[in-house]
Image (cartoon, rainbow, N blue to C red):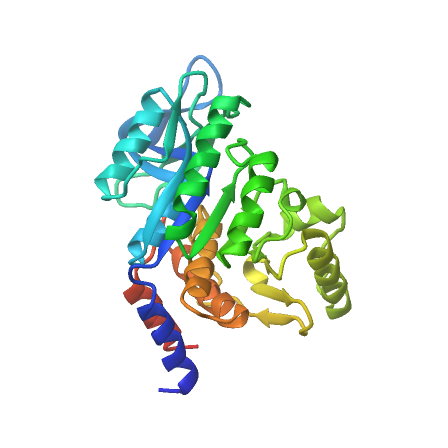
Length: 334
């Protein structure tokens, strides 16, 4: 085994017990399964004969479970509604033996829920034919902000990193971030950010992980493949995010790491390119990136491990997690 592989295995071993706070939007993912054998007489549409339902934690909840599956001790911080979806999220978190003390149940908030309808015959792979999003926005109240700020301050000295998962439901508030940012930076706690539409609104993180559409939205800049374009994109991202590093995820084109004062670092996609499902892959990437940094990895080492983790979960159906053993097996081929 090469020294490089031994180093990656050593870092993965350090994942166990790492304390990581997860602040973000907790989403309930619902899956409806059935088969389609008839056309409706009422309209030219398929009829789905319902067979089963299943549920998974999405958004910040998926990052939470990835961290737990990798042996870390995660601390969830966020808001759920006082509704059935919110109660289900709390029950699922507690089922995984994760304390939900810092999750606020808000009466005037509808918990985000994404329903994916999948159809197929008994012996075939179910295919997604429809997604229904029930979306809410976290109320902008002094009470909720106070609760989030209090929770973020309470866990600050207990954790090695704060993972921010912003799906644009406004659990993550700019004014709250501005208050906790200097506190976390003073204690040298890593701040990692995955933001759907507000990449530039939370400056000064350790690292952020935009995908190409998120980068295009932030910089108002289209994507290209040439190295000069990547260098200029990296320069702009580092300047405008004020982050120490930015990991740009590019789907089948792999990832590119931008660091201050260092040349860009390109990482090809790990594993096969015939991807099964990309749902939640970004949550896995930032979870492993955060854990690796908390365990003493360099940005490049953390990016390589995150890339390998992403390659594992996109070969699984639905909102998925991975284990330390799966990641160990993956790094032996790097």
